[in-house]
Image (cartoon, rainbow over all chains, first blue to last red; front, side, top):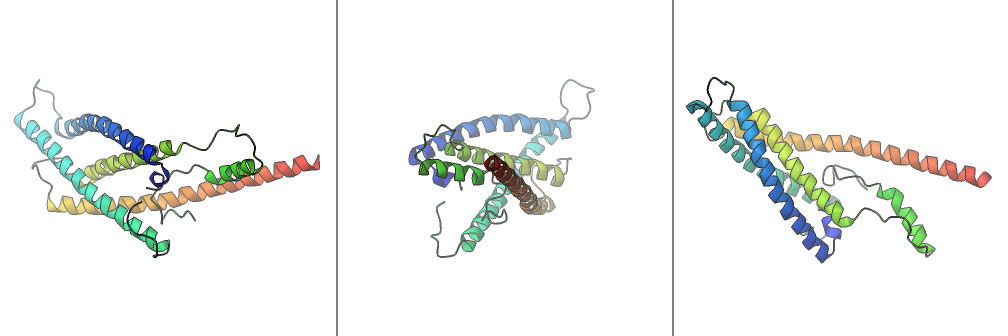
Length: 101
Length: 128
């Protein structure tokens, strides 16, 4: 938000590109992180080489729940950011143009 | 005025307050810019975006750890878990503001100390 506004159009394009690259890298690391998390909470015994039914169900549920929680956090996060921006523009003297940052 | 409670939380401090007087002075005297310029704005913007992505990841992880039962008996979040998530995010953001305020104060103190030191050094230099 604050730094972004100071960039030239070309730089903004470059920023978007950087963001895309970052998102791609992020989705890969998110995958391994999620696996690690769900393995950690679901798989606790090693009597067998393969997962038993309850472990599979747990892992699938874990992944599903984490994704749903991520969505929810995203909503709240965006709400909070919007509220903060509103507060900032209001504090800066309401006559400022709203929208666009 | 840079109070953290008004701006985006945890805006990275780049000690602009110290660099601005120097570049202004140099431009005024038409000096060659032999000193390195301030941080690249594209880098700053990219870093800020990365910070938000990292922050989002951290909140998701922490709130999942604190709110979601590890039994994972169902594929959906329970009502209580969803309410917990909302409160978790809200508290996290508030904690960020508070911590950010402390951090900013420390930064200002440090900048003030450095300024005092510079002034002292200048006055010693003048006395010689």
